[in-house]
Image 1 (spheres, each protein chain N blue to C red):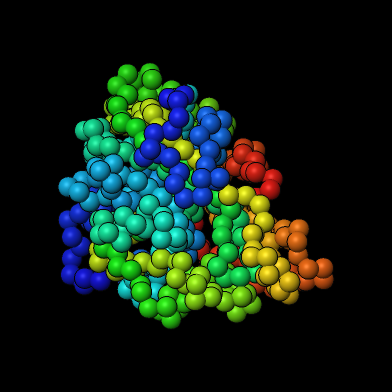
Image 2 (cartoon, each protein chain N blue to C red):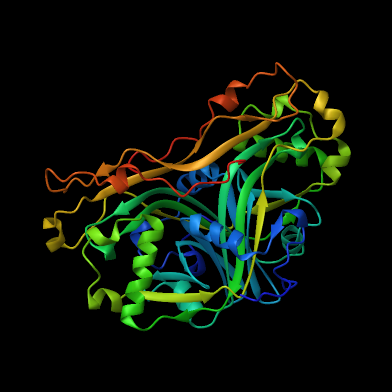
Length: 223
Length: 223
């Protein structure tokens, strides 16, 4: 990623005090998010499609069927925007106007290139599994050469990226602090509940610990 | 919304059995999602920005500062794509290849128009508050005429929309069902935790019930 100042098009215009451009902040958000939203343009029409991703070093990787309209457009060189958003809480102010959300988001631009080498594809898919649910990869049947051929893997170098973050309590107008209205933050997070066994599960197969104790990496404490 | 067959550009190409075009399915997803991702194009570059939305009847409404780059572009007539994604669970198959996610998403296209009339703006903002946290609007200080002027409200008619949904257990290759690997679904949902009072809260102000008991509308049972 460019170490100079952010480019104009990636620079956060509104509420610049919420912006961050440093690598660690951006990577932490990309790494916590389970899914991203991918924007691309076909015949002037923007499309926004959710998919899973993984970051390895300086790249975000996407994967899927070679028949995917999105991956096809990206592989053909379409400009792409990838956005990862983590919702951290509802910000409840004393006035309707100052209600907000606590969130962390990353917006990045890049140009996709296909990963062709089967062993590198396998490494990316392994990293993707570890990103979503650590411990799973080593237990399951590994991809066959044919499955690897049927999986398109794209690398999007993180050329330009910015993060936008809101944390903390509501900010009301001075005169509203006297109002007898509860104000504060209602924290939100993505949580797992009881695993549902496949109806065709072999009897006696136990739920693995990495499934039973699943949780996403820790969130900002002040969320 | 058009009642005829879906247009080619909104038609789900990959895994068409996961697609839905009926109004009730689409509305339920739009109404459960707290945020959407908005795609638009500036100088050929797609942007994807998260924001909150509310559906009223045949329209999705967005709002924000008139200085917002996104709202500015949309008001100026930029083609827009709005996507709402609900993550319902991790689908853990016996093979790496057949891992998936259970999700419900809506993709819609439309063209934005500004809501100018102050009373209609107020109604939209009220609906938005009720969408996010029912009960809040009636308790807080209402928007002043000046705050309404400083809020841009856009209506995007739902001209073309499709939903894509995956539910249920993993689908493995026949020969893999014999593997001694746990398989099933780990349900995920957005949950609220203990409310954090504003440090400047008036002493003795109780947490309202609609905050303490907050949860999103019910999700698909088979998630």
